[in-house]
Length: 471
Image (tube, rainbow, N blue to C red; front, side, top):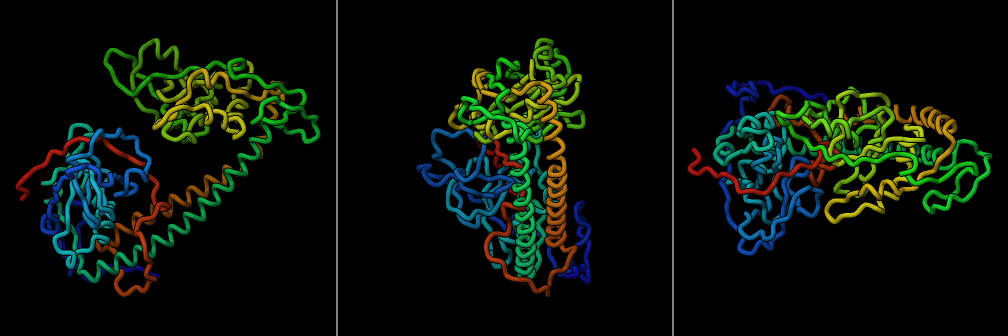
């Protein structure tokens, strides 16, 4: 399938796209949409959420870190095929066309297509999520802080919108649906491979840190149900006897009277097996006392101590060498080895047999957390120190190839996702002509879960600053 440009183009005078196909039109959003502001009398309709990743979805279907209002009376109503824009997250394309009847925050804009025979909501959904419109929405969102940027009704309604002929819109949607399905299948297969590789890696680690690497060693009951049998010469010890535990309370802030530092945050630990200098740590400030208490040292194991999901509790990362000026941030705990090899301790945290006890002891309703006592009282297998080092070497050797294949596969996924982003942008802006290309008509959604990589984002509920008399 060879993709070609259109035969003729015309100038647009837009900064983000120089030319459009000659038969395409450019109009303002106000000519396509009417603003809808109908409020709920009861607040009992289904509550909907709007995000970059999922578009418009029932709030109960997505994991968001949002507080719940006491009443949703007065929230905005929206109907299927209405465009809903999270005005405080529009700059990151927090928008989508709804498939549901429900209510949304008053901080959201709701807009309805005036003439559905002129423009397709499915085409517009692709268009507004294209990279070119990410730039346009960022420019039109105003505010002092990035987290407080807001897209007003007037800014949206005066935004230029690219409109191909209706038949071409339908062909664009059909083509992109087909390509998305191909890409989604590729990504599903790759993710399945990664999951199998991770299970293989987990089996190697779990066996090594709980049973050792000598297949003929004599075993004994550990006395701990989730650890099972251990080599006869091993011990089981509570963590407090082999390491110290500190829960960090250093949050993200910059104060003039404090000392500049770099903060190792939750995502740094969650996304990396090792905390190393190549990570882009957040700039922050801290007091002398905080620096003394929470500076990271070589051999430390950092773990996540709270999360919205219990599966994300006690995720570990190892500090292989000294990192001056880096301190441990909020939502994390520093586990500092005393009479245990740091990297062996890290791998024991990686073991499901060990980490499951943290999942069980985590408490909370909407957010799960570990107390210092729960961490200190956890049981760990303890081989002699020399054997710990041998086990670490064994694990490194046996998982290095697995890690290489995982990284390679993740890179392949990233490349195909970048290709998809470019393809959508090129097709909806007319750089590629898909007229006459025969593809299978794929039913269902034009955006699928496998295609997305961004994490869920939400913003606090608050009233939008509505601007009337949009010109």
